[in-house]
Image 1 (cartoon, one colour):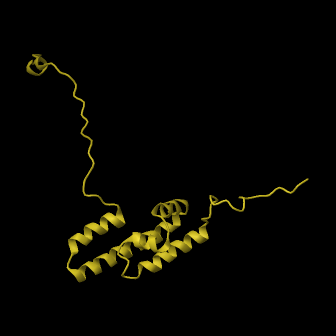
Image 2 (image 1 turned 90 degrees about the horizontal axis):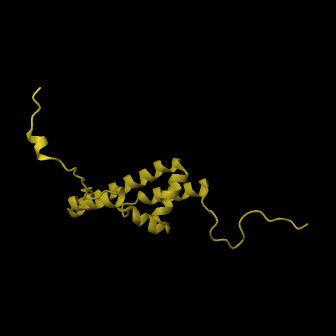
Image 3 (image 1 turned 120 degrees about the horizontal axis):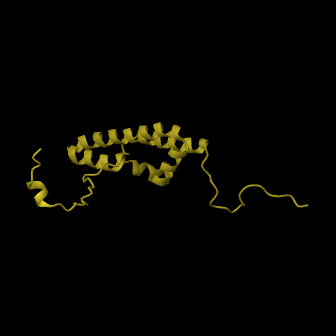
Length: 131
């Protein structure tokens, strides 16, 4: 009887590669980079590490203990953004851009204006019950 192989095939590029150890290492690398003031935007850190933001979201959902490290990275980027903007005198633009880039803020609020009106009889409004 032939031995059964266990695990993903050798050339399987779709196998899960993120475990807790290398996920933590990735976020720790991001945290280290975030202390450098040249990183004002979190996207620059992900680009440097060659990782998609969706991967970071996946990892923080898979390993919730990494969320605190991600928050530290975001806070460091916000700090860097403000320091760099202060040097250039462009506070307002930097604040808005930082909120949009690092914290998911949007300027416009999506509203639902679908209102269903019920038909009514004007006489019902004009008549009074005389009890």
